[in-house]
Amino acid sequence: MFKGIDISASGLTAQRLRMDTISANISNAETTRDEDGNTYRRKIPVFKEKLENQMGSGLGSAAAGSSKSAGVEISEIAEDQSPFRLEYRPEHPDANEEGYVELPNVSVMTEMVNMIDASRAYEANIQAISNYKSMANSALNIST
Image (cartoon, rainbow, N blue to C red; front, side):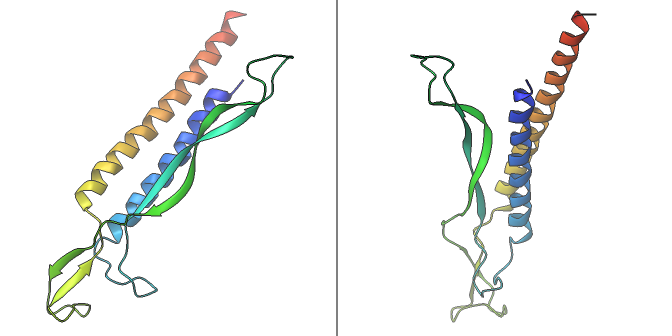
């Protein structure tokens, strides 16, 4: 009955995690050393379709044993393997012998575009939930 709300709620959760990941990328755009002494790598959430098992309602049913979409879920948070940026900063404590510092592979401009995309997807899921609630309320008012 509330399948539409459940699907949109999973989208809200996924987009919220995406925005959190983007925020972490932006805040670490200049981090040359993490707690392990490595240069920060850009993180990317990987989504996958959340499937729900569907039992067939009768013998010979085409849907027997099939799966049905139940929204989206996060399968992993991957690290972007693109090369690090090199900047000439001979005074930086992490500079190599030539004076270059290895900076994270984070482009603030790209992250901001991704943040706008994620926030719009979040808003679309909120609107879908609102529309579903409005339709359910209208269906209840038909009988009165």
